[in-house]
Structure formats: structure tokens, C-alpha cells
Image 1 (spheres, helix red, strand yellow):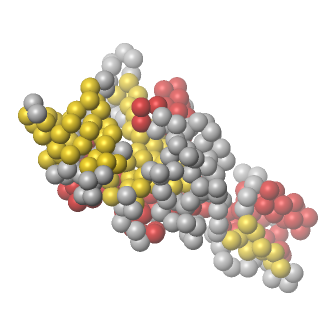
Image 2 (tube, helix red, strand yellow; image 1 turned 90 degrees about the vertical axis):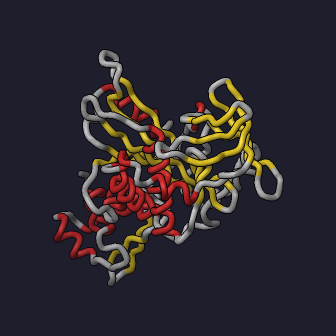
Image 3 (cartoon, helix red, strand yellow; image 1 turned 45 degrees about the vertical axis):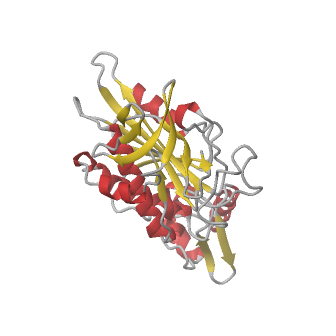
Length: 327
């Protein structure tokens, strides 16, 4: 760990309190000059550190995400990889899981993504400072049975618990992976499985969560501005707290999601039940009325051909109570 990282850990763990230069020098065994250089390095990385003669230094929780900052909010230790920018947290997770470089549950976090991906390979808008981009890289024991529908819906519940805890906001879901607030999409979940070539069984999972926490500077791109939203106009909480809370709720869920007990919680927040929808499943387009979400997280759609159980697909249009379609 570099001197700057050691200083960051000390200041983060005493966030809000002044720490004298003398105390820092004694605890870290460094000179005042080294402290000054480390502070400047951390500030260049985006950390906000106040300094006042006679009082010392104080870390201000703000826009910057860091491993040290996240760990402050965790209930238990977890492997973290935090990047300033990355092409895609899900792509990174898939590559490292496939190569065997990640062998235990690991959380990948990035300030921004240059090539973030959503469902069906779509580009996911992921600017710096206002979003949360997290992927859970999850190696699986041999012959583990995976229920994708239950995992994605349970992950949505875990996200909703984080949002309620940190922002005191209640979000909704559009089956299967869209996160909604005020009828706008504020985030999404991308669950991907990595298959072992020889056994043709799932060897690991990558569960990605992207969320617009605050409205980005300049707003959203024109192509998504009518559909995209954020939880708040400006960040009033630390994103380290947001990510830490998400990690806590995710792993609380992950240990027992297979029994399906998160499905009732998902049903309470899902929109569209009893309403007409258009749905795309592969190359097939379906129209019908959503009757329910079943115990495996599948959509039960009442179509002209009868009831159909949909385990994958995307709702492309949803008829809202005001008789307007929303994609």
C-alpha cells in the first residue's frame, strides 16, 4: 500500500474529524513533506481533503469512490476492485472469471464506464460522478443449480432496499431488470452466466447493476432523455455509502435467494400487472396482458394463444393507466 493510500485510509476512517499533521506523521511514520505530497496526490485523484493550520487535515465524503471509503460501510469483508474508469464492469468480470483470475466472490466498481453495456448489447450511459456501476463476480461451486429469474428479481429487491435505506425512496420494477422512479428508468440489472466448456455447466455469474443516482451535468443524451431519470437532482450522500449498502444487501440476498422468498417482495413493486404490453422474446414479438410474476420470476402473459410463461425477453411497450404507451 502506497503512502497516499495509507493516508487515505487513516483520513477516511476518521472522516469529519480533524487529524493533526503530527498525529499523521507518528501513525504512518512519515515526514510532514511526505504528508503534503500525499494529500496533493489524493486531491489530484478527486478526493476532497481540507487542511487548516493548527488543526490538520480532514477528509470530506463527497463524489469520489474508493475501496477504503466503501469498506467503511461494509458489514463483512469482501474482495473489491475499484477503477476510475473501465470499459465495462461486466466485461471485466466475465474475462477474469473465465481466465480463473477471480476465484472467490469479488465486487468490481467503477467511477465511469467507456463502453457500458445493457441488455441485448445496448450501450449503457455511464458518466462520472453521478452514477453507480457495480458488478458482482461470483464463481460457482461445481454442479450449482442457478435460477436466473429468481436471481435477477431478487437482485432488484436488494437494490430497492439499498435505495430505501440510503435515499428513503421507494423504487419500482419493470420486468425483468429495469429500475424505475417517477415513471423514469433510473437503472438496470444485467445478469450473465459463464459456462465451463468441458462440462457445459455454469461455472460463474456476473451480476451487473447500473444506476443513475443524480442527474448528470448537462442532462441525459437526447436519445434517452425522455425515458431516463435519476434518484435525485444532486448527490447529498456519499457514493461510497451507496455502494457499501448495495454490497451488504446483495450478499444478504445471495445466500438464500434460491428458495424464492424474495419473489413476493418483487411482486409488490413490479409495474404493469393487469395491463397490456408488447414484449420481444428473441425474434418473436408478443402482445398480451400481464397476469402475474410466477414463483420463478417468470412473466405470465395472457395472449391470444393462451397463457404463456416467459422466462426471458423484454417489455418494449407498457400501457399505462392514462392509456399512453411507455417503452
